[in-house]
Length: 134
Image (cartoon, rainbow, N blue to C red; front, side, top):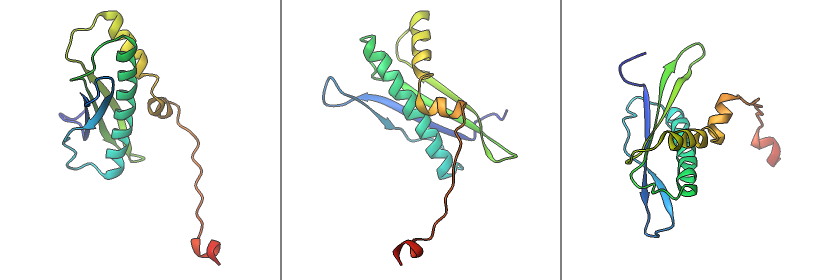
């Protein structure tokens, strides 16, 4: 594994003007050499993980402000892809072992995470819009 990941995406959780609403915002990330499709994949996984982390925190009546979700991936070959991915959730408070386990279980329920673990069949259709318009 190289010293630094090929791609990094960071989400910073912050409180909105409404005390009951929380949102995620993408922080500036060092994606200098990452292609747009790699950034989109990392952002999707990170946003999904953050969504489930926030859901866990809300159910536990815990503050989410200051929590960061960092997703990194290495470039792999044959075929070209990102592998492995690493999701890191950084919380500004100490968590008990039970809370860490609960947070991990919540993030593992992420739709994007599960889709990547159980690859779907992908169908491709190519059509000409000229034929449809004529």
